Length: 299
Image (cartoon, rainbow, N blue to C red; front, side, top):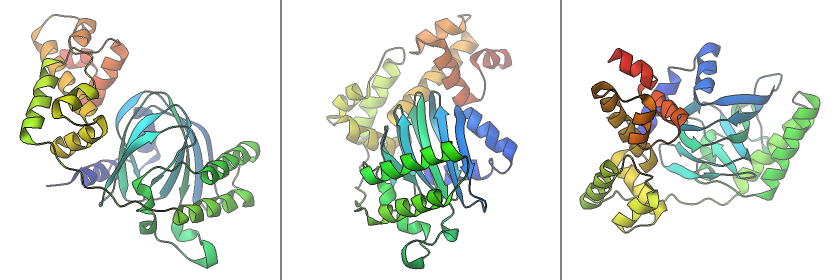
């Protein structure tokens, strides 16, 4: 059976081949590019992107992507063959998207600066060519590193001022890449699944509380765990983070109500725990591919 990583890879590998497909992808994840520069040989890119509210999977790349939070915060999960990074991105914090990995996220009005590099064209210290695999251990966590933050910020300001990738820009990339390889690594921890009784209690509570403002802390309390460890153990047991599982169950309940009742969309949104109709419509469309009104008409 395909793994979560393989499913995400295949989804994006097959769907981002043309500029039109890539444009639709960025629109779907609520992205607006504010700054974009590329080196003359295409080996280095720098993008400053604003993201509106979004929850779900996002693009896969064959490049090393070094990203830094500029504004807002959000949860980002990146999957690799060995591990999953799940952490909060916030201004100044730096993370890596290693080639051949895919991601998921949850954010609201987030801005990211992303530096993309084709490492096969980039000699590092002493002329070495470093393979992307060398960055996998560092990609297992986010980094609060003043040097990385300062250099990436300087590259951003340089690109805003000059609009192209200068010698300074390439030098900054070399500093960033070498600094990342110097950082200490952390062995990935073993993520244990929820036990069957723990999972049963959590799922039953979710089903009973689809219309309520349910928190991860409440579910974690039922399992006798911290929110952080509960989220990881729940995902290990179900394949989905708790917030994603809850959203999908709310949408499934909404689908049933749309088919079986005459309640309007706003009423149904409230019945499944959404007080904001635009958030309900966005979540429904992300899960089903249709707006609630279209779904009702088709079914």
